[in-house]
Length: 142
Image (tube, rainbow, N blue to C red; front, side, top):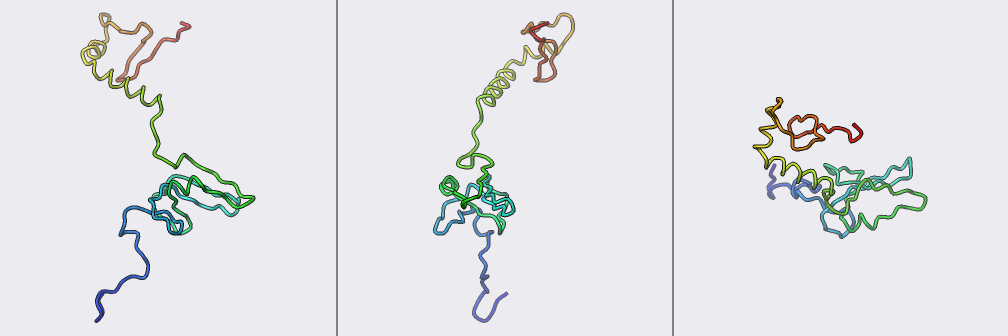
């Protein structure tokens, strides 16, 4: 809509302008990494990962402000996860990935095992059965 002075401008800033949400703290322009919500009935401040969308009763915080967060006296702070940085894969995740890559690199051995039958050889004497990339192993007690 236009007036004789030019296009009308909204008095309320739009979140559509910038895809990056900023810290809610005054004079802080850093990107938000966490969302703070107060549960007044329980006297609890809940700090968790950045919410999917901005809500008026929640506060987005940058990494520095989320680390330094303190609650009023008598209140409890609940931190849902490590929001100071991106989640890193664990050692188990990396080992599982490495095993999957090794398994995929041996197509001829997998093809021989897929044949099943009496003549099929298994590389592991503890292996009882196989389905895709999963193996059923015999218990060491057996």
